[in-house]
Image (cartoon, rainbow over all chains, first blue to last red):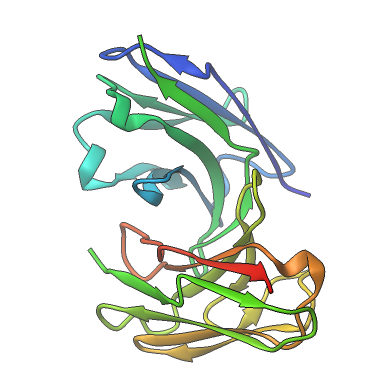
Length: 122
Length: 107
């Protein structure tokens, strides 16, 4: 049974870097049948896909254009987890952030983390 | 980006009602359409993938149909636990965009 456990700070100052980790149990971050996503949700933007990383002979990442210049999503195979870094945050980045497992057959998000409310404020 | 438009944005219904939610894509997405349910304060939960394939563990009162640009989610007989917000998502091309949501409320 796949489970995703998120961790990271709930408060980040403007201009700093938001960092969240998603620990995976019941699956491997290096699986060829999965991709590992970050999504955020806010009242103003709704559910917004941010990006993903996946392994297919080598590692790949794919990012939303809206955050592409500021975002990094990478896997840590030694700890079977993946993480999100979002640089130069502003109050508009305040949202609930979710990690999620994507099944590569239909790219559905079959498993989600519990969510982390991140507030950008000084 | 592919735009996903759901209707209605909200709906009042009673336990036992049959409810249909629609989702329209701004371009064809074949059957790459997924439906999620979100209870307040919880993460979304996958209900249906590939337009009509029921996820394991999801009650059979939920069903999905459609292909191309027009899709529907039907709940055949609403139960108290079904009052939540429902989202469609296209997974045809990145960014995998979501609809704005349909909130089901108790009448």
